[in-house]
Image (cartoon, helix red, strand yellow):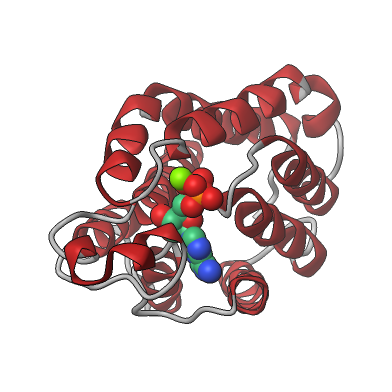
Length: 200
Ligand code: ADP
Ligand code: MG
């Protein structure tokens, strides 16, 4: 699929807009099981992305994604900054300029493995990986409802006890709340999937 500059702009705008619009919700989630900064962290990162949008979208898809990764590493902070930074950076390194669905899935798989390595974490620990991994599986299976898959996966982190990140300090008290990073990942997946669906 050719992702030209106008579409790249739409994608970046959609992702940034939804993260920024949901900052308060992400903060509330992080207040329950963390330190309450996830919304602000992500908002700061994606405001920086928006501030740089002309330069970002002028680049081919792989370079644009890698540049977004660098911005997120620098601006988001916390645990999630390096993790989202790694995700976008590695996606950018692995994805072709005009990816097919299966090439996009392969690139996402590479990026997920990089996040796991960076976070020393795996699926099932109540993190953003609990959304990204099922979304990858659904993409590979040809599912056409990725936002629903992502939302359900974020919701499914509620009964899980966190074993990574700040939420793990709470032990069993982390049970019963959705993971903020899982939620922000679901928002990003929804924005990407619905923008691509509109463009198709
Ligand atoms: P911090 O935890 O430093 O305050 P944020 O609040 O911005 O950073 O991000 C918290 C989110 O980061 C968590 O909800 C979780 O999804 C994710 N996270 C934290 N640690 C890890 C890890 N080791 N591996 C994967 N994801 C992690
Ligand atoms: Mg936090």
